[in-house]
Figure 1 (tube, helix red, strand yellow):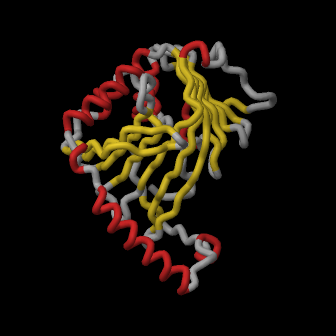
Figure 2 (cartoon, helix red, strand yellow):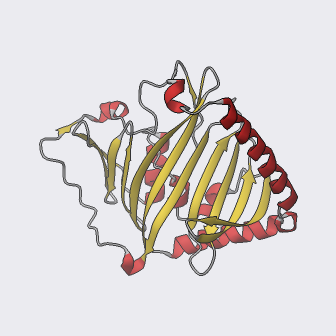
Length: 280
């Protein structure tokens, strides 16, 4: 979970908001008030039961843990806040293929990075495709161990890494102090259970597909201890498991002409959601 504040970001207001006429803004305010009133009248209080929410999250966790092979595509939106209190959303997309317990391939392509991670159970390889450079490190062990090492040692967390762990429930619940079941929500025509959780520093929500495949459809993390409440949204699509997952030997092949970086250069390999020129 990442919280950031941008220092010195001064985007072109006209490009970000080309239609700021008084008529449009007045209409926006009217509709905002109207929807807020409708929402307040229809909040599913009857569903806000902690036990139900925990049961649904545990069911998702158990389902994910039981899948030997998983693949999906994803889109992210990373909303950050400038020093003058402007919120800006940075977008990226990618893919994940996971084979438990110790194989992983993930890509991310956004405005600031075009990268690929490959893990074969012993070595993790990270490729900066635009710069045509790569770096490798020995990280023997499970995907759980890899996620921890990338976050804590290399400062390169994988997108939605919480959802890749072997026990998602144990990963997410220890710091939770408030739980709500908000009823149903629709994500790309899929009816989902919408759950909301709070910790001391973060609010997070998850939409879980209903039925016999309770996979995560959307995951939202909001940082409440930073002014402006930066927010990270992960949308998951094209979910596949078992034999539907395309075969992958998780063998790393360096791109033609790619330069291999030394281990000490891992921090200069720009694989983050934010460009290196931004201040966290």
